[in-house]
Image 1 (tube, rainbow, N blue to C red):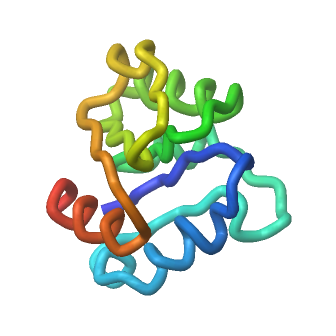
Image 2 (image 1 turned 30 degrees about the horizontal axis):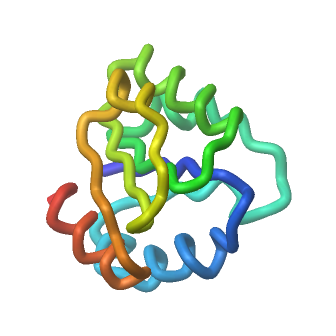
Length: 118
Protein backbone atom coordinates (compact mmCIF):
# COMPACT_ATOMS: atom_id res chain seq x y z
CA UNK A 1 0.00 0.00 0.00
CA UNK A 2 1.21 3.51 -0.86
CA UNK A 3 0.80 6.01 2.00
CA UNK A 4 1.31 9.76 1.58
CA UNK A 5 1.86 11.77 4.78
CA UNK A 6 0.65 15.39 4.72
CA UNK A 7 1.48 17.86 7.47
CA UNK A 8 2.24 21.43 8.42
CA UNK A 9 5.79 22.76 8.71
CA UNK A 10 4.90 24.34 12.09
CA UNK A 11 6.31 21.55 14.24
CA UNK A 12 9.27 19.16 14.39
CA UNK A 13 7.72 16.75 11.88
CA UNK A 14 11.02 14.98 11.15
CA UNK A 15 11.38 13.80 14.77
CA UNK A 16 7.75 13.69 15.86
CA UNK A 17 6.23 12.13 12.74
CA UNK A 18 8.76 10.87 10.18
CA UNK A 19 11.17 9.09 12.55
CA UNK A 20 8.55 7.10 14.49
CA UNK A 21 6.78 6.02 11.31
CA UNK A 22 10.05 5.09 9.55
CA UNK A 23 11.02 2.91 12.54
CA UNK A 24 7.61 1.22 12.69
CA UNK A 25 6.15 -1.97 11.29
CA UNK A 26 4.04 0.23 9.00
CA UNK A 27 7.21 1.19 7.14
CA UNK A 28 8.02 -2.48 6.57
CA UNK A 29 4.52 -3.40 5.38
CA UNK A 30 3.83 -0.31 3.26
CA UNK A 31 5.59 2.32 1.17
CA UNK A 32 5.39 5.62 3.07
CA UNK A 33 6.09 8.89 1.28
CA UNK A 34 7.13 11.92 3.34
CA UNK A 35 7.08 15.14 1.27
CA UNK A 36 9.95 16.84 3.12
CA UNK A 37 12.27 13.90 3.67
CA UNK A 38 14.65 15.40 1.12
CA UNK A 39 15.18 18.93 -0.16
CA UNK A 40 14.35 17.93 -3.75
CA UNK A 41 11.19 19.33 -5.37
CA UNK A 42 8.46 16.74 -5.57
CA UNK A 43 5.17 16.99 -7.47
CA UNK A 44 2.96 15.98 -4.55
CA UNK A 45 -0.21 16.16 -6.66
CA UNK A 46 1.05 13.26 -8.79
CA UNK A 47 2.21 11.28 -5.75
CA UNK A 48 -1.18 11.76 -4.08
CA UNK A 49 -2.91 10.44 -7.22
CA UNK A 50 -0.78 7.27 -7.02
CA UNK A 51 -1.26 6.79 -3.26
CA UNK A 52 -3.80 4.46 -1.68
CA UNK A 53 -4.24 6.41 1.53
CA UNK A 54 -3.40 9.89 2.78
CA UNK A 55 -2.45 10.37 6.42
CA UNK A 56 -2.73 14.02 7.43
CA UNK A 57 -1.29 15.35 10.70
CA UNK A 58 -3.81 18.15 11.28
CA UNK A 59 -2.81 19.50 14.70
CA UNK A 60 -1.32 22.56 13.00
CA UNK A 61 -3.29 24.25 10.19
CA UNK A 62 -1.48 24.75 6.88
CA UNK A 63 -2.68 26.08 3.54
CA UNK A 64 -0.47 23.69 1.55
CA UNK A 65 -1.81 20.68 3.40
CA UNK A 66 -5.36 21.89 2.76
CA UNK A 67 -4.62 22.03 -0.95
CA UNK A 68 -3.17 18.50 -0.84
CA UNK A 69 -6.23 17.20 1.01
CA UNK A 70 -8.42 18.81 -1.66
CA UNK A 71 -6.45 16.99 -4.37
CA UNK A 72 -6.77 13.74 -2.43
CA UNK A 73 -10.50 14.21 -1.96
CA UNK A 74 -10.98 14.97 -5.67
CA UNK A 75 -9.04 11.78 -6.48
CA UNK A 76 -11.34 9.80 -4.11
CA UNK A 77 -8.45 8.80 -1.85
CA UNK A 78 -9.01 7.55 1.68
CA UNK A 79 -7.93 10.29 4.10
CA UNK A 80 -7.06 9.61 7.74
CA UNK A 81 -6.50 12.68 9.89
CA UNK A 82 -4.36 12.38 13.01
CA UNK A 83 -4.11 15.07 15.68
CA UNK A 84 -2.40 15.58 19.01
CA UNK A 85 -4.61 15.55 22.11
CA UNK A 86 -5.66 19.11 22.92
CA UNK A 87 -5.39 20.41 19.35
CA UNK A 88 -8.19 22.42 17.80
CA UNK A 89 -8.99 20.66 14.53
CA UNK A 90 -10.68 22.55 11.69
CA UNK A 91 -14.34 21.59 11.29
CA UNK A 92 -14.01 21.74 7.50
CA UNK A 93 -11.89 18.58 7.62
CA UNK A 94 -15.07 16.59 8.35
CA UNK A 95 -15.99 17.06 4.69
CA UNK A 96 -12.87 15.30 3.33
CA UNK A 97 -11.54 13.02 6.07
CA UNK A 98 -12.72 9.43 6.39
CA UNK A 99 -11.36 8.89 9.90
CA UNK A 100 -9.97 11.00 12.75
CA UNK A 101 -7.40 9.63 15.18
CA UNK A 102 -6.40 11.46 18.34
CA UNK A 103 -2.94 10.63 19.69
CA UNK A 104 -0.85 11.51 22.75
CA UNK A 105 2.71 10.79 21.55
CA UNK A 106 4.73 9.17 18.75
CA UNK A 107 4.18 5.59 19.90
CA UNK A 108 0.45 6.28 20.10
CA UNK A 109 0.50 7.51 16.47
CA UNK A 110 2.12 4.27 15.32
CA UNK A 111 -0.21 2.01 17.32
CA UNK A 112 -3.41 3.75 16.25
CA UNK A 113 -2.40 4.13 12.61
CA UNK A 114 -1.38 0.48 12.46
CA UNK A 115 -4.84 -0.48 13.66
CA UNK A 116 -6.65 1.92 11.30
CA UNK A 117 -4.67 1.05 8.17
CA UNK A 118 -4.31 -2.71 8.54
